[in-house]
Length: 114
Length: 113
Image (cartoon, rainbow over all chains, first blue to last red):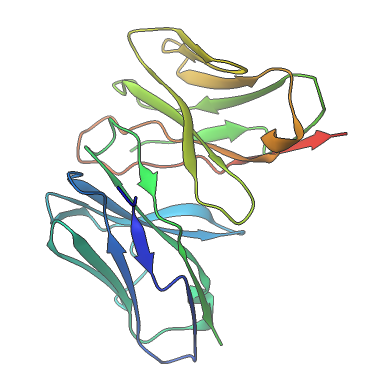
C-alpha cells in the first residue's frame, strides 16, 4: 500500500483565492482525519469522518473551511476565500477506527497564503 | 471533553542518557494510549502504543508506562541517540467513541552530543 496520499505537497496562493487540498486514505480504513499544524497552535484536529460521514467538525475554524468525503477513497478540504493566517501544514490521516487504532498520516500539504 | 497535558514542552538530554515525557489526560474511559514521533519536516508516526489491560510495554529502547488511576502515561527512551531528536506527541482517545481526539502540544527532544 502506498500509504495516505495527499496533494498538492506545496501550495502557494494569494489571499482571497480558493484552495482545495486532497487526500486518499489507506484502503480499508474507515476513519479519516484532517489536521492543521502551526508552530503557535500545534497539531489541531479540524474534522474527522467515519465511514464517509462527518462526525465532528468543531475544529473547523470558520465557514471559510469545508470538507467532504464523497466516497471511501477520497476527501477534500477546501478554503474559500483563503487568508494569510491559513498558512500552515495540513495533514490528512486515516485509521481503522476512531480513537482505538494507529493513525497513519499523509506527507502533508504546506500551504502558504500571501 | 478530553483535556490533555504533555510535559515537558522541551527536553534536552546528553546522548546516551534517558528521556521521559509524561502525558496527563482528564477522562478515564480511554483504553488506547499512543505516542507519535515527528521528525523535522516529516509527518507524525506512531512509535509505541499501549492498551489499558497492561501497565507497561517495551520495544527496544522505547517503553510506555500507564497509570490509569493517576490518569497519565509516559514515554521512556533509554540510551538516547541523535536520531531520537524530534517532537513527540501523545494522543489519548476520548471518553466517548465519537468525541474528537486531542493531541498533546508536543515535546521537543534535543539529544546533545
